[in-house]
Structures are given as C-alpha cells and as structure tokens.
Length: 401
Image (cartoon, rainbow, N blue to C red; front, side):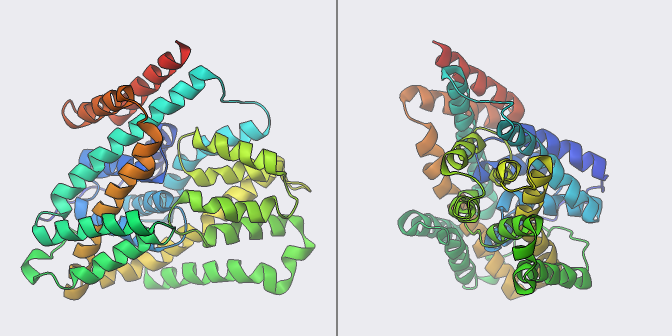
C-alpha cells in the first residue's frame, strides 16, 4: 500500500514540533526513535513504516547520533530543503543544550530523592514508548515467517556479540538475508522518504565532511588556534561514533580530559547530568565546551563544541540520502531493505531489554507502572507527553515518601 501524500510544511512548523519532542523525549536514542515513530508515522503520517525503517537503517549505518540524523532527515523532507533539517535539529537539541549549559554555569542541579524518583519515572516512560514502537513496527515489517526469523536473528546478534558494531552488523546481515526473500514477499511496506537534495548537493556535503575532518590537522591550524582545536576535537569525536550516543563517552574523554581541557570529576558529573535531560546525549558537548580551558569557553565554547559534534553526522546523512533514494528503487535493493527493516525491529527489540528495561524495571512496582504507560499509549491512545508527565510525577512522589 502506498501512503497518501502529505502536504509540505514550514521550517517554523518543524521547529515547534521538534522543540516539543526535545522537551519531552527522555530515555536515550532508542526511545527517541520510538517517539519519532509515534509522532510522524502513527500520528502525523508524514511517512509510513517502511520509509521510516529505511531511514533508521540508513542512519544506523552512518557514524553520528542516529536519532538526530533521523530527525534532521524528516525536517529536510517535510520542508523540501535544508532549512527544515536545521530547524528539526535546533528544536530537538536546544532544550538539552541549554539545560546542560546552565549546569556548567552552576545555575542548575538535579539531585535529591525527588529528582531521582522523577528520573526513574522517565526511564519507565522509555520502556512503554519503545515497547509500543517495537510492537507497531513488528506488525508492519515482520508479517511473515522469514522476516520474523530475520528479526529474531538480529536480536541474537546484538545480544550475544554486543559492542558498538553489533547493531550495524545485525542490519547488514538482515539486508543480506533479505536478498534471499521471494520477490512477492520482499516489497517494503510503503513508499520511500522524499528527500529533495540533488546528487551535486550530496557530493558537496560529503566533500565538506572530509574537508572538515582532515584540514585542521593537515594544515596545522588546530595546533595554532584554540577555537579551531576545540572544533576539530569535537568534530572528530562525532565522526567516529557508531552504535549510539553512549559510545561517544570515551572519545570525548580523550579529546577533553586527556588534553587537559577539563578535569575527570567535572567530566563525569556532566555525563551524569546528560542522562537526566531530554533530547540527544550529544548535547553533552555544550556542557564540555562551556567548561573548556583555555578559552574559548562559556557560550562561545558551548556553541563551537555543539555544532562540531553534530556536523559530521548531519553532513553524512544529507550527502548519502540522494544516492540512497535511487538505490532503494532497484528490485534487489528493495529485497535487501525488506530484510534490513526486519532486522531493525530485532535491534530495537534487543534494546528494549538492554539498556531500556534493565535500567528502569527494578521492582514489581516498576513493572506495573511501565505496563500502565504501555497500555495508556496502546489501548487508551494517550499522547506520549501525558505519559511522560504522569510517570515522572509518580516517580517524584515515590521519591518523596
């Protein structure tokens, strides 16, 4: 079935939608993908399950923050231009970046039993949201025994192998298995994502990615100017991250603590704060940039670090997408994508258990709350922001008792 066409929107519309998501999307990158699916596939119908799974698979293959790359691509597609992608990125990133900048400035804290209880409630929201996403995507993307088997194999690969490349490997194996699917069973669930960038713009983005990665070191500019060195360090960290936002931790530690730009205690404190805020974990860069010594630091350092760490992932997805859209039209590619989409379901299913379930459901009471959130979303069709407020409030209440 081909989805009905959706009218394009403005950058302002995209910004406001993603700003709300940036304020309410707790739980890390896997939960963010579930929030996006609920908002743009189930509610607004900007795209269908097949197109969304294709996009997630592409972003999983590329280095960078997967959820931010998916949001950026949705913004580009919605407005027909780069302004929509930048609006989506800014709206989704701004809340967490401002909170973490305030933490660096000493203007905010998140401690005490009430705050810890609220944070735990937000983790339970992530369980409900991710479970809803896995259930919905499985119905559309694993409708038969072969693709259900691919999803199960992906769960096994991620669970037994682990590591940052296990997810990429699972999707790659799913794509290879998809080539063996019968032609009649392998068609994607719907149309592809309309991505307006031309091949020339894609090549420009890919060339910019390489230039920004190599030029500071090759020209010696990073050694002679602290602002360029700051950009270079965070850009390289963002260029090497596969497998989710948490993988960036050792890379950022090597670029900041090991170089004497900040101390270990401040680094770990900021990383802990980053777990308590909504939006992308990469916003941690704003905290580190604000604290960096020598200058630039403060608002300028935070801005440089934030832009630098996100830039590689956004340039890559913008550069690769025009070629991806053409590739997916070929019959063999469509079968491979059908297998990759099934593997995405398995990857999300594995992540539902670890780290989402294992970090949140610690008691029978937690299970009851998570189940209540899941039923609120699935049966009573409650909006995700309402479930966020409910479980965060119940968590804060339990922390005060």
